[in-house]
Image 1 (spheres, helix red, strand yellow):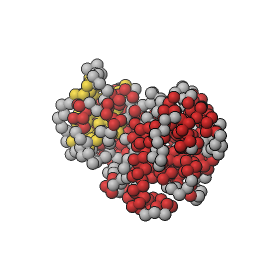
Image 2 (cartoon, one colour; image 1 turned 135 degrees about the vertical axis):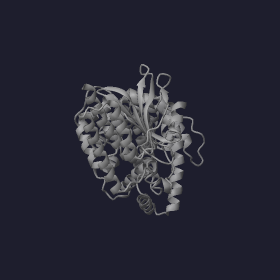
Image 3 (cartoon, helix red, strand yellow; image 1 turned 60 degrees about the vertical axis):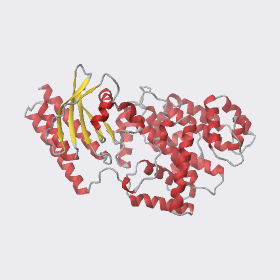
Image 4 (spheres, helix red, strand yellow; image 1 turned 45 degrees about the vertical axis):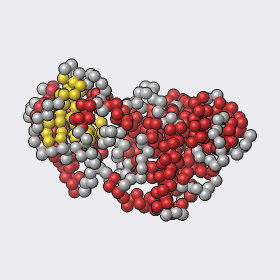
Length: 484
């Protein structure tokens, strides 16, 4: 990304359109030249697509993956446009360029890339779910709803795809409530994602329905409700942090909209998921396939550890007490080892980790070696563990090279595969882990890890954020002590 830092919505839209995603801008403008209602546009559109080998190939794959009665294998672009219709063809071309363009930044950090790919998978699935919810509408309306639901978060996706320091910083606040997160967006980028989506929709002329859904999300028309429900449903399926009753209420609303029962709806959602996987393969978006999930089971809702309000308040009190203890220890001149051990013990008690360890950089920063480790009872344990950093990339090299914390609740997901060396897998021990850099000033001296060892458990995102805050305070204290 360019070093230029936009400060307004208009500046961000200009940067995204011209510098970050010019291929999408060019394709959107090209497609806009062909009318959805003019059949004479079909041969002209076919000729335009033929000039782009990637689009031609994708169009043929999608056309042949779409089951249509009485249609033989489609082997030419012109035949594909006739079989699919101009509206569908334009949507396929735009989707293809979006998938290609948004994932094209090789400089994205692992955390931002993971966040972006999940968001893109949710958006793509939302488009197909929206289309599924209007089975009795004509194909053109279905395609309009697909596009509006898929692009509902286009401003957000485009922002994360730009990467850079501002994306890294803002990522730390994505778990905040919507209103608080919007305030952070205004602080960091001078606008919010909805404004970016509206701006890009206007810039790329992405359709009146999308603009209406962004400008007037409270509208009660069937199309608007469909876009809203599809966006919410895809997000809940990907990450069922809602309650089971909330999810059932959403399904009830959708079933009522479609005039079918819940069992029928679940069957259609399952069919749509299978269709989504086939289409993503046609688009060459294998990275997104693993992120399209099945309907959540009863035990998956609020999968992270459920904590009552009273317990949460107690955690906050313990956290503040720990800040105070570390500050007092710093003022009294305690050494680095004392501060590190206090932090590990307190983290065990506050966040219910089953192990909390400090790994120190050694051997000219080619290894990290366990210096201190505490078990679930906050008792010191002997952990003779050394992890190599020079032989291959792993989760620890990522933390040390980027200076960013990692939360890994799904260590065997495909996107973690190349970072899971045998020694890391052995250390994780069929559990989950979070890793946070330990710093003196700007220099990283090691990593602190919090672990759980039952694979059905997850480290709560809110706990992870608080753990990061604790270690930021520790880093400040370590820096002050080192200067004395």
